[in-house]
Length: 321
Ligand SMILES: [Zn+2]
Image (cartoon, rainbow, N blue to C red):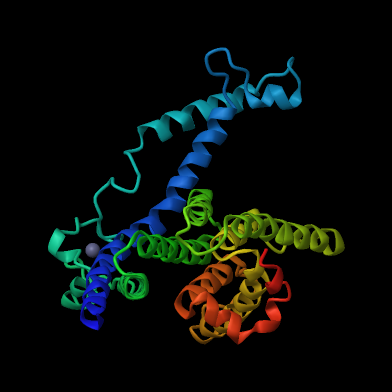
């Protein structure tokens, strides 16, 4: 039993290392893809295309048109955007961000290549961030944990996907203060589908209410805070991420998730402070990394253990929403 459990975990761990290598691509490229899309939309909306009125005339009235200079600039910008080479999760092939040298397959083996290259680009010797092998290691460890706990099953794969998506959201938000909808919605839908199929062990009603109250609670706090202080403390991505976590763990875990996320925030804040990353006080740390971190803590500890740690966070536990 233990031997096969260990074998499953080792196999999943190797898969997790390879997936982690891909997550590095997702973390780096998703925001860039998003920005390119936004820029293209912004420029396109200024132009009249095939008789469809520009957003300018929809906003300022049907008799106005986009100012000629702006339309001309938008037209040129649109041509430049169209002329850009494709950029998505599979193209272009991975390159050194410094010298542009193509990364060969043997330089792209998770963790090992980093050690073999001593953390430097094979061509120009520019240091490579240790974050890349770290993401691979964390992904490998979490995949191994999921297989150890659930075996090589659909449930194990589902929780591994949960881990992978949260790793991405954690780092993308830390880098950019954005939580891409594409990843939030994938997480939300997988949680709901997992509950509906009986794979996450959370009743479907608890998952749906978890998503509803997860979203609404932060939405409410956001608007109360905004009206009281005139500032915006969170973004809509945070509401969606807590909704997704509520779908995975159930409505009765929402208070616990928020409590654990403040703990993650304290730990992460101290670490960043120690690393000198928070020297500028005006650099915002958003709430997303804490929420994603809380989701990962719940996965690693196991939801039942979290319930034992902080039983007071489950006042409605008996209702089993
Ligand atoms: Zn290089």
